[in-house]
Image (cartoon, one colour):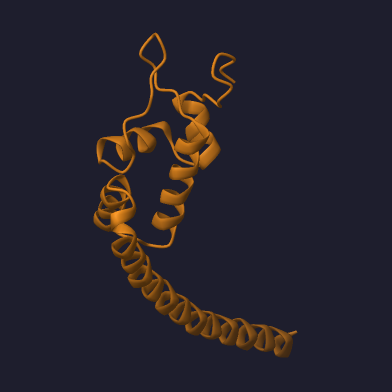
Length: 129
């Protein structure tokens, strides 16, 4: 904690650990424009706030759900423009949500095939025993 401001202040390593990224990836997010420039301490080292960490957590979820980096970059640009882009941000998320739901359906079908094969092999093993 930074006592002077009473705000969370994490190093790049601490922030990376908190959100489950490597420090390299976290810096890459910043270079790609996915993260607004992060504050620095008097020695020039990055210091991440709670707001920065929350933003990074959102980005990691978007990435984990398969959102392309170009869409993440577009979302970051829109968010920096403020409330006048709320509709565009919603539309971006609705499009991504549809892709996620389609992936879920596909994964459920894949899981059925795996379950079938596991059951088939289990029964075959029992017959051999």
